[in-house]
Image 1 (tube, rainbow, N blue to C red):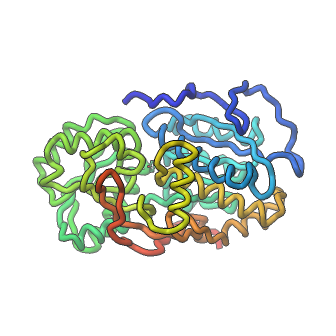
Image 2: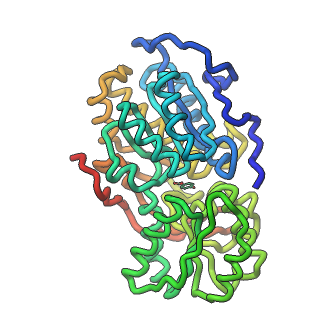
Length: 397
Ligand code: PHB
């Protein structure tokens, strides 16, 4: 699939709140108390996840703008790096931000494989990292650390509630389909754990390499298997294509399509009527009727001209979380222990609903069952309230 053109060339490093392109030779003076806080946005700005990265970026900047361009009373400057969703480049890119660019905080990324490379560098260098999307279970499991937070979800958390929701809807046999990489395996894993615990059966697990989108053979296989329903994880450009291909195959009416909410979040404009009736679980729904969500969607639209989605919310909340930490230390980010303690204890009135954090710094949050109706991910019910990832293997207390 062709990369979305966001006007950002591949591997471009941009510096400055206004996003003015400058060479990487730019030297920024050592951060002194009172100097701007320097934030590295390491996100995909090209490829199948390009729109996701851009929305996280916009959500983060929206929060900062609402605080008069400051976090914790400090001015903010940004370094923007396109990680291209390439795990093999993840460590080098992260090292560049914390080493050469000397950022105070890295916000990134979308892809679980890239995020795990970032987590390793964050641990080795004791750098502050907020993950605004990637769900890799290990980031808040065995690789948890005081300096690592997540404002999104664990892969397990996003899909575990779907197992019971689908069983309760009378579904007994399911075929799963996803990309062959960490997030795909873990999203299917969370769903399968709960669905089989209820008594459901997985008839086949279908996979395709990331980020390929040649789905035809797998859709033909689904038609042969005739499961009660399909459970899928794809996101971004891949999700757009899968939902359209599934609809074009004619299966949508006979074999209902379910999935992790990423299948239909930030994608509905491009999916059109092909997405009608698709049911998913996620920590967000477009029509959540809380004041924070209503205000957020209005402000995001005013800033970008686009409808906010879960990625924008996760970016917005990443900024809110760091703001809480910086405020607790009067802007002195070197007071790390106190800052981390405040972030860990944060209770955020998020557009998604109440957001707090477990000992591994993964969100505790509601997971909603949604259905696509009239081009929106509408709330059906709370699939599971206050879902807390088990943080398996995390040794923080
Ligand atoms: C992931 O790789 O963890 C991932 C990517 C895209 C999503 C969700 C999770 O929408």
